[in-house]
Image (cartoon, rainbow, N blue to C red; front, side, top):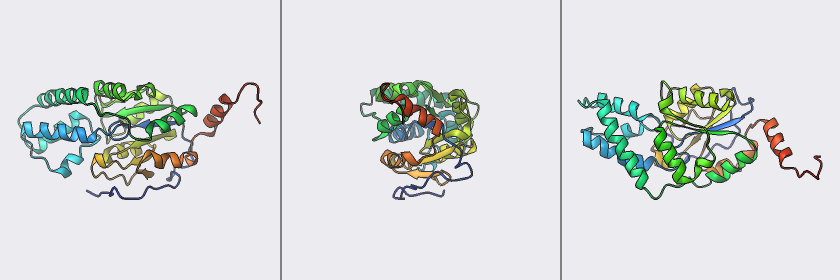
Length: 260
């Protein structure tokens, strides 16, 4: 698998590609590895589950499952390793372990710099959504434990669409729920599967190089960042819709001071 090393420098030019002139009206976030650094926790849980079912898993294969739904992952694992268990058996065992571990985990916090970025988007009137391959129960749990739920009224799961990432379904559905055309959305993703899904949906994509997500190929993204500080530094240069920004400015002008 082609990889981009985590010491790569962020690409700080404006979003490129043929859709660069299309204004952005919404931001869609993946959850794991983008909102919260949960991928290392999942890796450990998954390794335990793979061992339980007798799948001898290489690190390279394991990283290919980042961003896909649990059902898709287990279908592939059972098939590749010629295991006799059913998908239902594997999912039942694995989901129970995930929920128990995440409920008990005390270190779940938002990724550094994220909330400043979300506050800025909220201030500018730019709608956001989370679109994650994780089950809804897990998304809601993480939203509650990290305090990020106040930002995300729209939460899309892989359970709600026919095909999970790398198919574009989940991002297209998120755009539909936002009421915004796909070409007017930016997706922030940390996985190769997620980036492929975003680009297949016709959206701008920012690749988040999170070391905890393994060695992911984010080369199809329009730009790459190493942290939310990188994104914060270039926020004014991103192609957000000028009408949205103008509305946010007018809302912030005190009533007794006429606009210029």
